[in-house]
Image 1 (cartoon, rainbow, N blue to C red):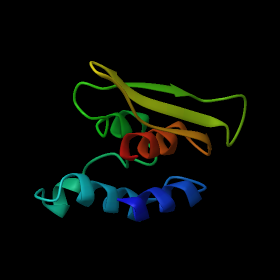
Image 2: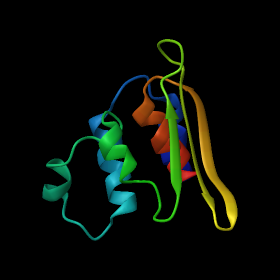
Image 3: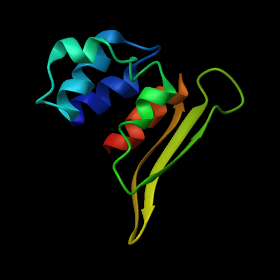
Image 4: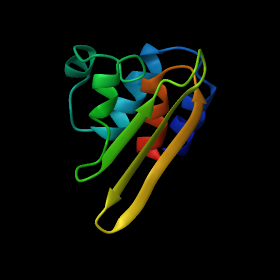
Length: 101
């Protein structure tokens, strides 16, 4: 998973191949054809929200301009931060990083 986080941190825009790699890592038993019908998790905030673990909450902010999106994923019971990301090109990419840390 660390290699995907590193690729996400270097991403400058939504990326179909990166989205497919994330899908395969998160849902290894689902067929590729099904994955191609989904919105790209690096380009769609709705799709990226599906990566947030059950029982966790997510916060996403677009920031004040391009490249300023950030996100955090956490749970309150017990309190634990899953991950966070700052200064990313899109809110979806920021959320993908936060959900996988």
